[in-house]
Image 1: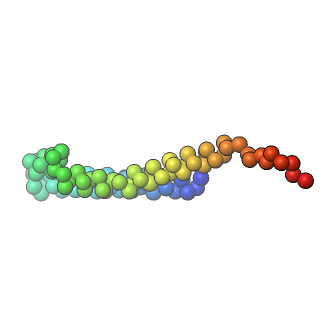
Image 2: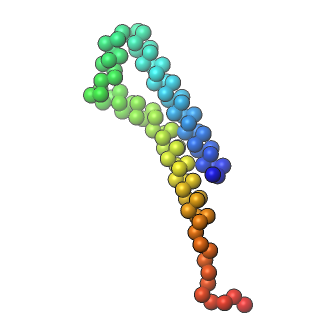
Image 3: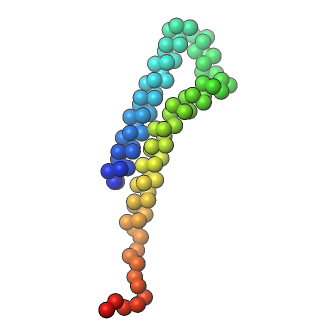
Length: 91
């Protein structure tokens, strides 16, 4: 795996961990300040604004992981490609 792929994967992992901590801590703050029913309202699957916010928070980390996977796949496929052989003899 290339250094760039490892760096992208590390950045994606750090982003996802930070996003997860932020999301969990914000839910705990809502639970503490506004109570259980406010948290239930926040976690309602029909609450489009909250779901969009959660998706946008986690998206960069997921995209970094996907980019690292693509980069690894591309690097592996280019290494397995046969060498180009000219049909004409080289003098």
